[in-house]
Length: 465
Ligand code: GLU
Image (tube, rainbow, N blue to C red):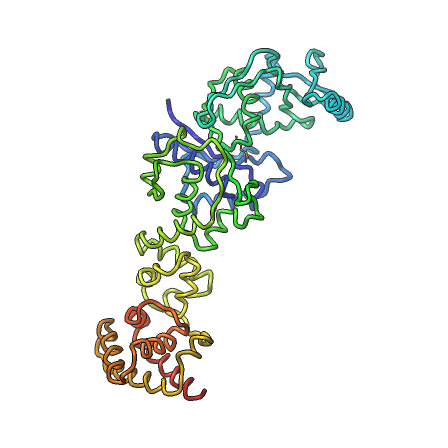
């Protein structure tokens, strides 16, 4: 059997972490089995679907690197096909026109509520053999007896009695197909072998299965993923902070850190926390997914991000850092090689935003010194320390970290000062702040010209105080 999975978002918002996790699991399953992964845009809700959301979903998928083998397919391009299937069901006697008015259905629901019954359509038009009319909806004739058994790959066996399921509307009175119909027609036509989706769809599954059976289709396997909760136990939503995948990019996360976080959210493989993509593909298994909901933990994501920043190829991190540099109006061509900056900064920066902010001075002049750092380190007489350092730095024929460091050591000794009393004012002078990578690294990354001109400025500043 060819394994085919799909991600089928409705373009009514951005790509959120729940959707991204579903996409990732579907993608991993296809990759693991040498199968195909489809992207399908479920845009039949014309009022709520927007091109902007489609773009946001495509952008999110691209940023995460979840490339699809087929698609994107758009359901709005397939209306003729849905009509054909609805017609087939009508002709087979598996669907019928229903004229029950809204008022009638509301009254029915009220009555059922009063009788403490589950609200459901009573099948009034089921055997009425109505003809097509302008205000009729079309309902699927759900089998009256028997049961539907789903062997869910995550949740295990789920059995639903057919008399629990009422006759689902498959076409509205304007002839447009409903969500449940379009999904199953697409899954059938596109040869989807595994439907991996959120468990908010689990109630739809037995209905979809019954219609698939009526169409004589081969049934896919199902895997319903439990929800993601916020740290307060409620379903993850905007009020918990970032939920859009692109917002994580904006906040300075690496895509592979987010993928690693998402794969662990609802799946595990022993105690292992860090997975390369290849390891994910090799080890991922639907059967090992959690049955119950998982809780989103930003601290853990941040930790993972830091791990990835420290252990990935610096050139790769630099590639993503350069996006943030641009975002902050910093031109990374006006200074040291970004990969070298990554190496120097990654111990202390947990996000790319932090790294871009604290690397700005390598590329741009700063307007002011950090107040506290200047107060603490620029004292009367510090100008002389800086001047002495500057004289020696200027004489260097080669701008070399080791030599620069030696000069700082020698100067401290000559002036009988603690190393900090020399290195720290120097750091503030060249970076504007009290924290930077080791002084030799900072100076070699900055280069001769920026270092010397900033030292001259600092001397001026101290003298004018
Ligand atoms: N379009 C549905 C959604 O965005 C998903 C349908 C499915 O996966 O079957 O929730």
